[in-house]
Image (cartoon, rainbow, N blue to C red; front, side, top):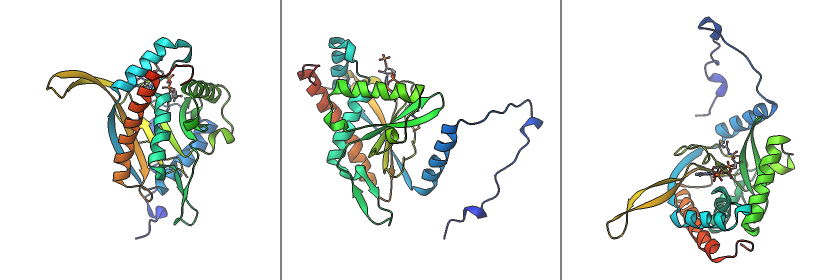
Length: 256
Ligand code: CAO
């Protein structure tokens, strides 16, 4: 049966003022623009949501150690995560595809530009970090800080928001245990991340030990990706984070 949006009941018009005092304000230009795209993507992409948590105990120990050794090049958990996502895409390249305009062709992109959702006073902007797989961690941290500052102070140009193969949206600095981000078309997946959680876990010898977990919330386009792809992808992100942690520990921070 074809979906007939016009056949839906009209949007409810309510006189809110009859229930108590009200105030009105206009949405920002960014909110209006983004709202249109989000609405389109929500209605036209068959989203599925996959939730996972990956053990980042070793990766986090390495990051904290890095930050102590190299305080002028501090890394938030998001920076190694971006690299891990780029590497996980190398293992599962369907996460860097777009559907062709005929709806039947898949375009594989061999670059690893990643979108990063940035909360700004004017609304949500998604800036793009280019070639995440080819840059040292301090450079990525610097570029992320610059992109964030520019998005918040002056906004981003269309070019600075274009060309990502996938987007990462982090609420980890605030909290949460999971959410369901909307895919940024023509991408086919977006990875949400929430706050690190440390809790006691039974180790191999049966004793409790503290382990740290990163919650991952992956939304994907079910026309292109299936549940097994999603489950493998989030696990791969965890594995890549652990391997990156080992690389960080062995490296001279300046060269990593
Ligand atoms: N768990 C615990 N702590 C975390 C964390 C996580 N997953 N992620 C970040 N933090 C910590 C950082 O380490 C930092 O701590 P310190 O001050 O001790 O160094 C603190 O939170 C602040 O981080 P930050 O926000 O400045 O930096 P970031 O690299 O984590 O994120 C940015 C940058 C721009 C992505 C983020 O600030 C932002 O705007 N996020 C909002 C995105 C959004 O709105 N998404 C929802 C859209 S719906 O899809």
